[in-house]
Length: 220
Image (cartoon, rainbow, N blue to C red):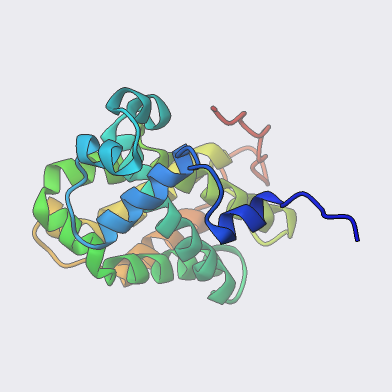
C-alpha cells in the first residue's frame, strides 16, 4: 500500500506539527477566559501569553475596551437570543417580555456584577457607550426583532425602527445598571413595562401606520 502524506490534523495529534500562530480569535478566547475568572485584562500580559507583541494585539482588537466589549458580546448575544426564544405572544407584549427576560438574565450574571463592582465607570463605558461593539450589536438585534414583529403585522411602530431599537437598548440599560446610576437594584419588570408602553404608543397623527424605513447599513 502506498504511504500517504500525514495530514495537518495527524501531525498535530502526534505532536509533530509546527507551532500554530495565534489569531485574533485566540485573543478573544483568552481574554474571555480571564474575564470570566475575574482577572483584570492586562494587554501586555495577554500578548505575552498569546506569544505575540502588544502592537500586534492592539492591531487585532483596537483597544482593551473594544476587546472586553467583544468578550461581553459573546455572552450577551446568546442571552438575547434565548430571551427571544423563550418569550411568548407578539407585538409589544412579546418585545416587553424579551426585555424582561434579558435584563433578568444579565442582572443575575455574577461575573458581570463583579466586573461592574471592580470599576463602575470603566464598566459602564464599555457596556453603554456607542463606541462599544456591545451596544451597537444589541441595537442591531433590537431592530431585527422589531422588523420581524412589523412584518408579522403584530407591531405598528410609533417611531422609525432605528430610533426604537436605540431606545429599547437604553431602556434595558436604565433598569439594568440602576445600582451604579441611582443606587437602586436592577428592575427587569419595569424594563418590560417601559418597553410595552413605548411600543404601544399611537402612531404620529396623520397616518395609520409607521413605515419601518430602509435598513441602515451596518458599519464594519
